[in-house]
Image (cartoon, rainbow, N blue to C red):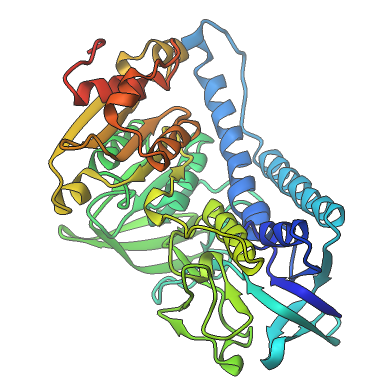
Length: 462
């Protein structure tokens, strides 16, 4: 019952922290109240990508003649698509079970609450409680779908992301409220398989955290695919009348009512910090997040927090990096604090979005003199051959020193290309060095070199 490290929560932050702790020789346990892998593996990152892949395959079938192939028929089997997605998630969760056994990590199922003196109580499914102790406790309890006061989720008419990926039947129409990564990914998925989709975004552009040019390109692409996009708009009420919902949407033009089978609330997430003992122990919180130092230590000795419950980008890869950093610091290793300015963000709709670093607007506001280059995929031989000419790569450099300030990509497979930029920025690579690094042809990735060449007035293929 006594451990060196206990991790509460088994998402991509928690289970990675537990594995690293075990590797470093700590006696480790992990506590999970639902399924190993947390939201990411069971209800987030992984199963959504399975849904999106099914949608992409269906799109290929519908456009097979564009590639010189004739296909007779073909329809989206919604229950089968959902079943495949759940199967992928289940397989990944079992993979985490294997990793726990391999690394000799004790898995404790139940709901945890921290107590003073390094104690942790765990209530299991039948209501019985056991107590454990640890020299170090890492909180990795993740987050859940955020609810707006006028958009309360009932799991039937107004749903969150969990219900959106496991509906029993395909809705005829859906209103997606919010156009961040979750919103646009589900909008793409449902539209691709034949559901009528409307996106409602409160701000003046979709994917508002991205560079403005990326937002504009994605809006064009989604509209071309048949999705209705309403920006500077707000859902004020949802009224159910039998089989349909009346959705009232307010904008500068006035109020309009739409009918939709389902409303998906995708307006962000809320950290899970309630009922885990923070108040009892005295762990400091601020604006719904646990306050930590650069190495995830709270104000209470022996208590740490990582992932969605601390300030920073709420992304799976960020949580994993935080978990590793936290454990290595506990072990006394010489570790560097994470650079949150070099975290890649990815959105997996079609076309995909990937970005890292400063947007053009942010770079100008920071006072940089800029060299900016763009290369459209319409000029890429590989993109033309693949039939994926939507989008571009935009590279932003400091004109004085050639520092790579940011990169913004929209197009096919760009989520697989952004890592080059993350590594380049980590190594403080200059624009001239990227320009002179020979990229393979024909590839989508050579557009990085071409966009850099454009920034320096040396572009060849434009």
